[in-house]
Length: 162
Image (tube, rainbow, N blue to C red; front, side):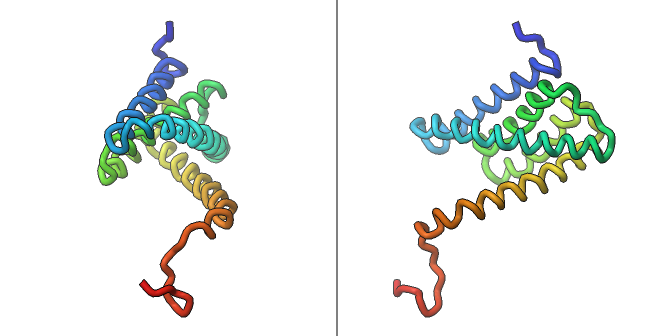
């Protein structure tokens, strides 16, 4: 039986809830045949997102002396902090998800890691910068491969007539 502690049980429930919300949102918006692909994409982005958040946790801890606890528990908690707000993007309308995900992320950070608002905001800022750098790096590597296959309307002397 899973103990409902903030170290393992609750983060695991949050991860499973995030997966369920993603499946429901994709089913509702895109149809049943896209659910497996969406869950696979969620798993891949959760692994990368959790890794990036772990780097941000080490940076935050070094800057302000905050503790994120034992490594295995911290990884599970960070996965929960990543996956639950991410799943809200799939389950909610975009305008509402944009607002709700930030609030949920900060509240989960504060609750699961016993952080103050200042510490949670600092962590979120560091995690955002790290994520942007990595995602832009991935885009820079991938774009030359897929960029030629995507036809963008550019205009100018080489533009084709409509």
